[in-house]
Image (cartoon, rainbow, N blue to C red; front, side, top):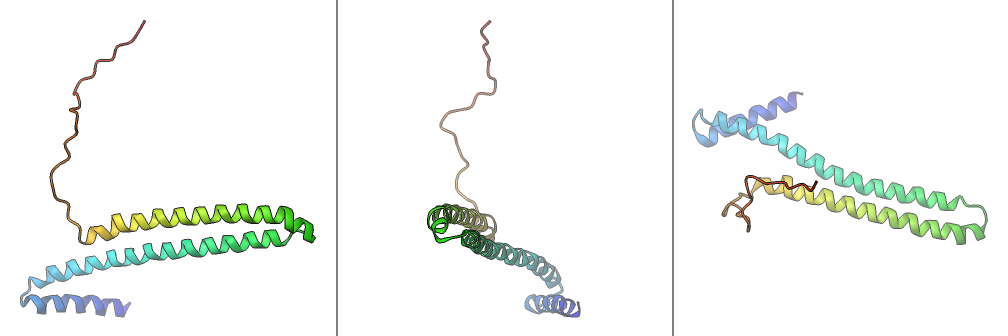
Length: 138
């Protein structure tokens, strides 16, 4: 608790020193506000790590299930088919979740730090009509 308070006061003091006026308090408060976005980024990347760990845990559970089959014949027939099928599903889900969460991190959180939209507003190729007449057949 005291460490957090000490750090927050330190950020405010450094901001005042850098601007050489009391207007640095506003910049310091803004810097304190930015800390929450860094914590959010940390949590988001921790989610990606958790996705990797969950895929590994699911793979371990699949290996355990296949290993529980009695006899070598059952393991080589049904077990091998299940092994390939279950691990293929796990690999697909792991790749999909990694792609979706990674893309979300890049486009939502990472681009917000430096990307500024510019250019021209979108102009559609065809003008959309304000009123549409619906014709029904009786």
